[in-house]
Amino acid sequence: MAERNPVKKATQASAKSTPATGKTLKGFTDEERAAMKERVKEMKADARRGPRADKEDGESVVLAKIAEMPEPDRAMGKRLHTIIRASAPALSPRLWYGMPAYAKDGEVVCHFQPAQKFKTRYSTLGFSDAANLDEGALWPVAFALKELTAAEEARIAALVKKAVS
Image (tube, rainbow, N blue to C red; front, side):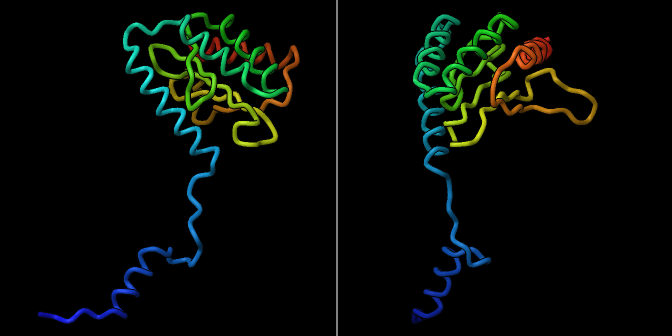
């Protein structure tokens, strides 16, 4: 029977647990882990509801999530919800990683990421690849929001309409 080499084994274990650069891996932030946990809960809830899920159920869940947000995210979330619902009534409100989102045929088209969610300096209105926003070979899919004026509201309404066209 071959004798084990403890020095070689320790070196192998050390090489596996430490990256080649010598830096320590940090992994996900607490906020990212919380968002992933929220997504798992959403998927389980969707599976339980199955085909019984409807727009009204999603509407109440999204409005409840917006109500939990601190200001100024709450006010912005309420206003965005109103704009999106008016611009694209065919979109169904739902949660996506714990954020208000709006889906077409079960696929998220756009979502609102409040600044507080990941402790950023601005909120974000994002669009998925399901959004029809293509313009040549390059186009924006996320927009930083610091405040909503009439000009921003009109631009958002136009983007949402285009996204579902």
